[in-house]
Image 1 (cartoon, rainbow, N blue to C red):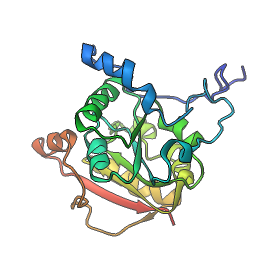
Image 2: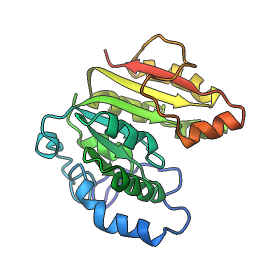
Image 3: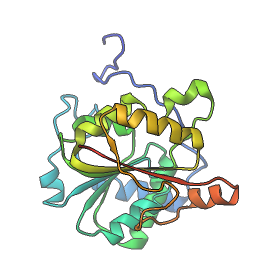
Image 4: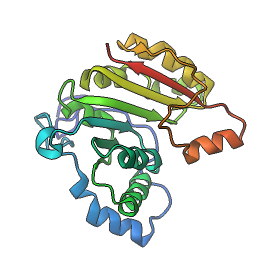
Length: 234
């Protein structure tokens, strides 16, 4: 094993944040056991794809356009988008297993069949998505990491944004929703550096297809103003 890598060959990537929370309910454990594997987008993990071979998206999703949600929380936005856009396939990446379990319950309840789930670090997904394969990406209410020394842990750093740009097709849209003013600042600084263009619109107006999530409702209750930022890959 070389320095800076795992025995699987995976590069050493610091991961910050929770993987598990409260004890899962029996129904959630059942969903994880019986539903999760069938929703995989393909071999993403280094243990099953050490060569980092690109996913065969056509074999998995047919001709559907591919969208990606980065950190889907409890899955509200992801399921809403899947229901209102049945013509697309949406891959959600989320390492917090309690959130994954919540999503699986929502998928069952909604009866949608166009969601795929990677229960892990989105950087591993970016490794194996073909270049230019994604038509839209979402980053909704990401971990704010408010302390200045933790800002490098935020998604809006070059470590995440450059691989994201690589997998987006030209003209693809990247949406960011946050209620943290300093996250807005870092987003507006870092995302253009990675090669994105900002789409000009009032950042206090939600997208027309935006479903207000529990994270947004919490922000509004606590007096924080949501911001909605839109970028495009040239």
